[in-house]
Length: 263
Image (tube, rainbow, N blue to C red; front, side, top):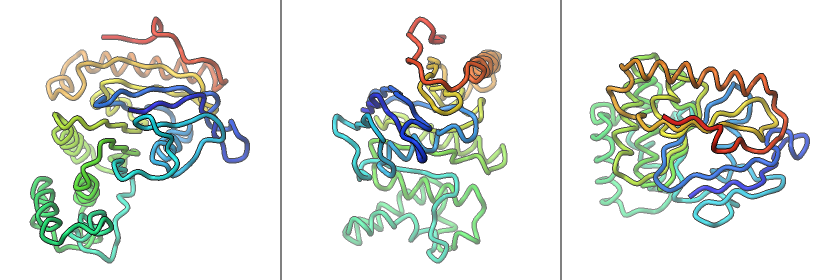
């Protein structure tokens, strides 16, 4: 579904953040992009969403170059992106209104997602009257109401307390299971990456050309988070991330499959 080929991107120079970067994601896969703050993870999300464009190289979704935001791509941000003057229900309906969906169909779809995410009791509250977890649930409902084939999430749970964070992680897993939706989540939290990412892309300092891929087949299973294997995998991923950071951010080829970590 996603094919990033020979990507170079930067703000002050063409290869400042990404330098000859290659990456592929198959349809239906669940990926987490893990790396230190400021390395370019959010930039990658913006490139996939069509909000930024490569200096050179290409970003393709379903075989077509990404030249603008797509209606089939959903984006959930860390700061929720809610309209402060609109009630929770109207925030969920925003994308459907933009698409000029018929009122009855829109009301049914909004009601379904509000109920599915446990927001029925706060439907008429403004964002300022909601907790952080409720605001993020509204943002998730607004995105899923659009039925995206690709869901991009940029550190959506980083500002939440640990209990709410784990609750929303479980929610995302439950909502995406069996849907065939491709998901890419950006984080700098190793435990979050190991729990949510069936494949983990570990990147180092910019410019990013080198990376590691960790195969993580037990991800998204509730029992995995509580198992010794989970903490062993977290330690393993932490060591690989440190190794990549120590190697520097020089633009080199992606590491071959023999260097990838499998279960």
